[in-house]
Length: 258
Image (tube, rainbow, N blue to C red):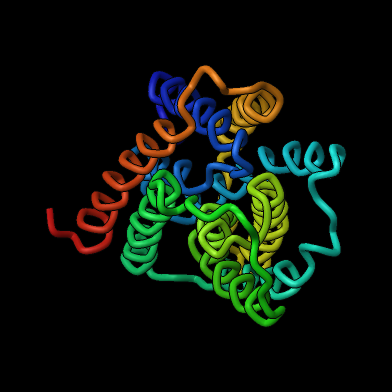
């Protein structure tokens, strides 16, 4: 075991909550898994590997339910997926120096917090109708976010969904379904990239425990209504926590300021 049992219990609780909340809006929780793991693990190969596995577990169930209930159609998502899969694989295959990885991770967490917070402002949802965009924009977004997702070990949905909501690409439920599917394929591609580059590092006991709790949390989040909770409040608190950890990772682990 790389993590003491009492710390692992705390980490499992955090992963369960993250999976439950994120799955309810189509996300896997990768950015928050990374944020939590940096508090307990020092190996960035292990951090990336566990985050991808947990992302994959959560969004597999979510994606199945979105397709089953008719909220997702493969043909509508292909332009995003075709360009994201090879770029996620490429990003994950990079063997970064530890400090470079933590700098990129810290910046990514800060950006994800900003993107998540943007969704809570009124002006972000002020115009409900959708717009039509050329296909090349989908390829461009898929490629860019796919590469970043593979590089740092997240599925990329937390970046893609706010951008598409801002662009009014489609209805919120369809964007959530796309985000979930996008995370799924990029997590698989990123995982393969880690395997081929020899960067995959999975302590079996910790990985198994965390995979089980995110499976339970993810299924709970996607299956029940969270009407008792304020979706806006959840996003703001999550954004704040991710921002704090992102700044810490950037300054402490990446830049070595403290």
